[in-house]
Image (tube, rainbow, N blue to C red; front, side, top):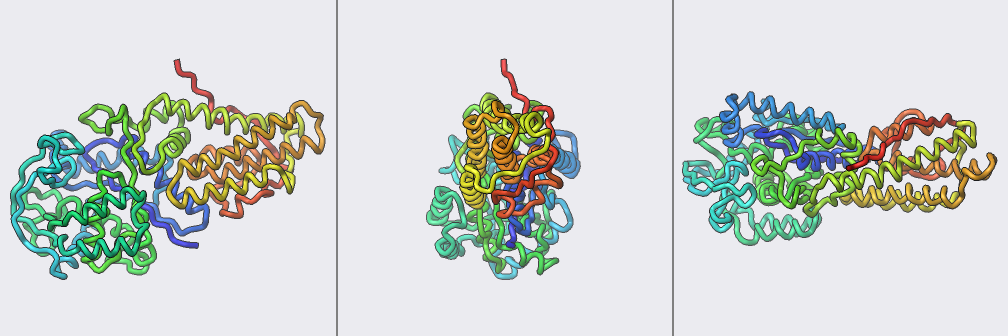
Length: 502
């Protein structure tokens, strides 16, 4: 058994959660569930980023204090994750005292090592990104991400000596070639480092909504150098060394490509300066686009998870975003695509297989599920499906893992079509075909649990098994022959009723 520590970015509390946030979080949740299935000790972290000028301005616009804005919006994220059956182990808020202590401890360490010094900064700043940009990085003076004018800021700040870490970062990434995936994003990070690194402003005096700097209380830490430390706070940095050392640096950060610079350049350099190892894995994904554009409040194209769950259910939502959007490149969401995937894979394939098998067991076997054959034609398929699924989950490719799992569903439906047990009289031959189909459903219920925990638990229950597929352990749970036979198989309402779009 190993350890698996997975994180999402912590989300800004300036607005409500949308399906872009949900995409990353559902992916992290599914990875955590998979690694629990294989017996790893798992820690899954998400949370909210609650400091900075962006939050302060949004609070003022809403007639709230920054803390009230943070409290209200943080709850909206918790509610969204509850709706989507997100089984996180910790939800961190950067306004918590434990986080203040960790931020101050880490950056005091960097300060004491001589890598933080006072200087004056003047530059163009995007409040929405909470990031400075060079003029050559802007598009007609606008932030390339938010398409808003950058603002000129000037103040005396403390700076982190990032320029001293250029070669150390290059050396570290050369020694750890798989630390950033996919390779295109690794190359992007290396390109940023090779073009030269400038020292970073990491504090502010122009606002008070932030973590106070321990050696100079006139300053607060700039939001990114507060936010990034959350990954250490949650596993006990500075307070629980045994727990911290168990999970760090064996972490898997899931991030969007717009925050690559912060996680793949600034963050590992800060850790090296504090005497810590950089993160073991950073998995970078593209934008979830709507109509070809990144979601944002200003573009009025943000879609809330609840809007879609109302139509396709929680597991239909989860399945779509894991199956239809490969992790890595940009994905383009459409409602038509959501419904098409739901009807094809869930209603027609999995749902139809469960309904067909349970009905046939009722009519041909008096409702008692027969055991599978020890050398079924489906056994080799099941073995190949497990191996392909496991490899895909391990490389953070949920869409490929689910495509492999659905191969077993399609092959089982095809096997039933070929054997036509509905035309045969009850007897050993019918029992053998239906026993094989029940065994395939059992294996699918285990392998698809990370994507659809509730639906897979219902499949498990209907084919007469006790407990839950999430309690099984791989690879044993995927080996052919686990369905014992002699169990009551229940018919029920369609697991995934077909959606008709006018």
